[in-house]
Image 1 (cartoon, one colour):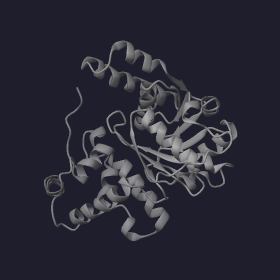
Image 2 (cartoon, rainbow, N blue to C red; image 1 turned 180 degrees about the vertical axis):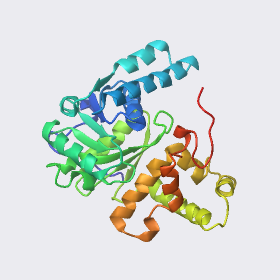
Image 3 (cartoon, helix red, strand yellow; image 1 turned 90 degrees about the horizontal axis):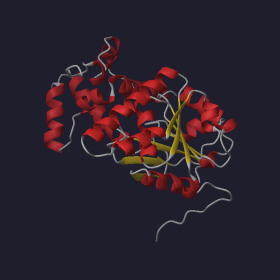
Image 4 (spheres, rainbow, N blue to C red; image 1 turned 90 degrees about the vertical axis):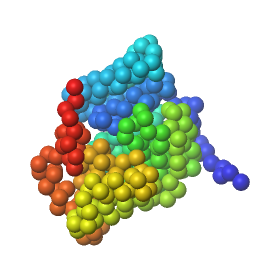
Length: 303
């Protein structure tokens, strides 16, 4: 028998959502904003750094230009989507009229908690507040910052947002069934296939599994059991993965992976969670993967 979701009085419904606010104009945030805009939503994209907003909008235009050139989108559809994304520096101004908020700031607990404290003060009392964090559960973000935690949830997208179909909806201890249902419906409305994480766990589904796989691969490499190239090849050919863990680290960003590992190590204090020394050396050398042209592998400069 399907679960019935109880709707609290004055709770946000999917049909009520007209305006979306995305916080953070980095790669993830700008593409999340564009994904929402492509499906008809008006989006306030906010970042404290004006240059980040400029880069995000410019990157989105390039992405759409590519789609237009390949015949996947008309020029009119591309221009309409871009026009629905409104860059705003001030967070309070951007969030004030939003029905649905997606926080996509960089993976830092202190920064994210400050954002949610601001949202508690300025957002509509019925607005749904979500975080795109890849590892930090929503209860850590809203405890002591949000008066009504029933309307908060994790909403984890995957890179590149315009291509990856999955979005993870994560419930916290206080997240209402209504909020979870609307988040699932919202994911479908913007062309994604949502899955529901019923209870909080570090990394949700995908990153929880990936974390253990990556740690095992790093242990093999660090212990001299195999080269990173052969580990990648083995997992691609043996498990039919499209990318090996070292290729995936380059794709996502070595610094992003390192930051997530550091965050986990700070939480647990478990020596097995500490990032390996070779990652620290790569960070110091700015070998961050595809975005710097070199990580575990080397990449030709973009034309």
